Length: 463
Figure (spheres, helix red, strand yellow):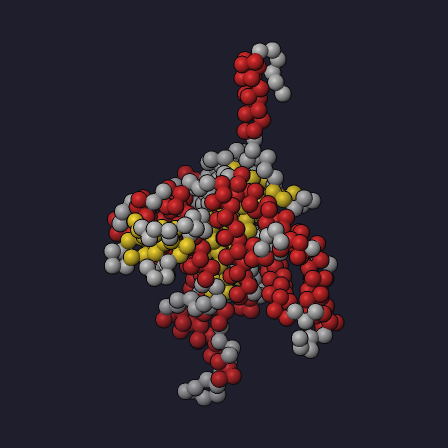
């Protein structure tokens, strides 16, 4: 097991002493279960890495969200046009700007604090109309390594690096999967026919899909989580996405697939690809690579002008060259899906986020918008599994496999009201998300049934 002393472990990681998970860690340590100890240790020691939060005021339907503390899994629910997508887009954009600053040089930060670039790029990329913003609009973002403050339509963003910026900055892979995702299958050759004068979220999504689908070939297809009887692969010769039925071998283009498959397929494939990038090399331009090496050489001078020692090469900024985490932003996950398929898809995505976190020991993040009580229910089951796992690991694993179980307090859930405010709907005592806002129609249904039964059977309403 090694020579790690209990007292040293306790002093170094005192943040988790009050949590029951420390008891689990100690048991694994004492039992010399090194493999499981390291997996659990790497996840829980980084669980508090998320100190990020965001607050939005007077943008589109959003009036005042208050501070939203980010978790590994974030859920936004609400009626149509209450601002779910607006909030998630602004969050994703702030995380993207932070990523650019963390991996770039001083000119990147300067660019986003001049010429109104912060607002212009937000409006362009996410296709916001000018009417969504006013002099009273405000975004306050506290990130992992930077803070962003922007208000009004004419003001530049104020962006500051936190004190630990140089030590803690990292590279991350972001992916926004829009509600229009099924257009890739529903419209033939969309990747060649879609035209835009500027890069926007849909165009970027098409580019990411084109990059991703090469993973799956006729001989190495992907079995679909939402339809295990089907396989997906990309036919490079025909430049066509294909579905194959496992039982018969029959093949057809995704253009002829059901709407549910057309909606779920891009989610599954992109989730697998993006989460699989955790720990892998990130593409960098020559200028970015030059800047990274320049800073490295300034901090760690070479022994001579022509070479850097192998020992010093270990100090290269691999946390910037490699993706340390992934971030997924998915609109309306339930789109066109049967309840059971929603259940399976939620579990698959959560397990993928967990695997990415285990790979790098950095918390990856998932943010969802939904109208579906089934998505909410699936998350509630996994949240309860997190609590139960601390009480009785084996009994819990008999019900929910470990790959779906995140640390407790990894979830956040919010309801966007019609007044433009935000309500935290996570019941801390029960450890579950309240579903009352999504199931408000039940009382109306029951009332109508009672009144109709009274007509059918006569007499008073049946209750």
